[in-house]
Length: 195
Image 1 (cartoon, rainbow, N blue to C red):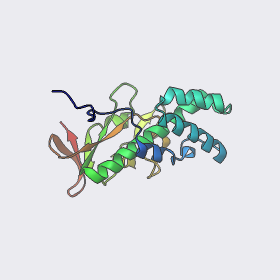
Image 2: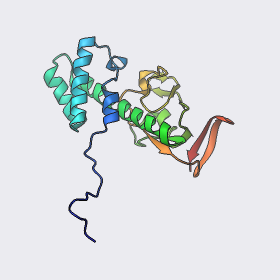
Image 3: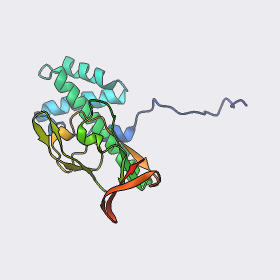
Image 4: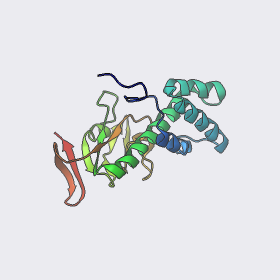
């Protein structure tokens, strides 16, 4: 079967996520690092423009350090990764709240993952409720437990150890099937974990 020339079929993965980019343009970088208002605006402008063009984190870091001498590559990477991650997970959360009854926390599952975030892998809760993210130890420091609507969420003022360069993602869940209750009170913040 051939497709008529005036009909386009397929999926494009090159189209920018306009909701995420809009959210990214409003991220407060000073939540992650002590920055002047002017410096924050300059860095965020680079991050947003590079993201809009699909250039990725490595290019953002290069562009920030090339254009702003007072920011080193480690700082630029922390700001870029954390801001982009936060914006895209927030965009996912906003869509999930509209279209799915539940949300699922998905960690990366590698040896760099925070212990508290490993425990969150495949936790399923109602879309409108925040996750209860457990405390964990990082070196000699205890990172306190917190609440988040999505990985990277700053709404409930979590310790930055829960947020900076986190790589976890948020996904929609349309049924509780395949999950089991692991905590919470009946009818309130019931938590399910995929089997």
